[in-house]
Length: 420
Ligand code: ADE
Image (cartoon, rainbow, N blue to C red; front, top):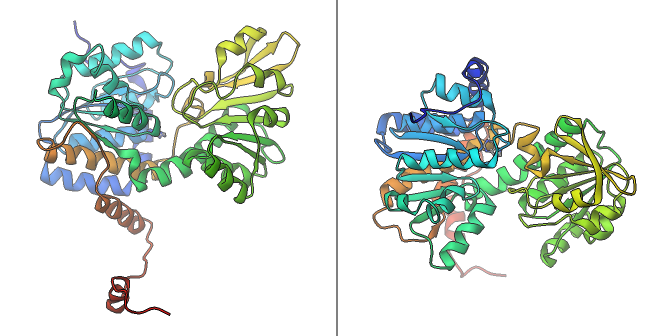
């Protein structure tokens, strides 16, 4: 018999509902969109498969899509990020099927994705492009049903753009991450804060005075670097991009190669989107007790296979903290199995910032419904007015007002005659 849902425990639903309502209370923009969706039903009858981190915030998004008339199925975009409470609430109270359990193995993870695709979605939502990737591989059979997809994260957008460039993309995709109201806020303030949260929940270390090495000075790395500095850490940046390295330097951070940085590091956090950023040569140079974690999308940034090879033993010393003892006797702590630490040991980005990311997702779904007939097999960004609208609504929710250009100022900005 085909399962209607697959979650850890339906009894967690009451707690989950409480948490979802807490998140919802801080997601004003998405709530506003939901009110409009209820009236206008822009997603009526549309089948949506959402492969996202199954959190309270995702629950609010799923409800919004459903309120707009969609038939939504939710699966996890990472085996370790599911909040089983939120998953249970979605099933029991919001009547949205979920296939996700925190700690599921790889096989179950993909079974769940396949179950979502079995429902012949017309829109897919990804955080990391795993659904789209399946639709171009083992589940090609389902690609013809798809009107378009949306993508939440930098890594997923990189994958989609690679598919577009190779001429492989079978439908249009909206890079939600390209919206300024997404990456400038979610990636910077969301990842920045929740990565600190994850490190602290896993280790309870004092950050003041510690040397924190941040690999990657993109939006996420910048966010973490600033927040770690705010906690009194001595922050070192590693980069491969000269512009970003220069920017980090002029932002007042110390910049050096990873091989040098690890010698001093109390904490190393990777946020690059690339593979083996921390490798054997780095582990060998680390201090005894160094803490290593990742907040990039995939668990490829820390080469754990290499660490296992040079270790004689490992043990869990706290939840989400595994101590590897090297043959030399040196100890290295790996947090959250090298997976996104902000979602593994903490709760991901706070609702207030996911509000803008998921407002973009909801509007992206509406955009696909309206425009799929003319969308090409390309990666799209949402129109600029969507960003302006979301920023405006967020400011209003924060009870902030701003100045408006006068007629004279508008005229000046479109003229060239007045100079020195
Ligand atoms: N990605 C990062 N934080 C998240 C959250 N709270 N919910 C869904 N996706 C996320």
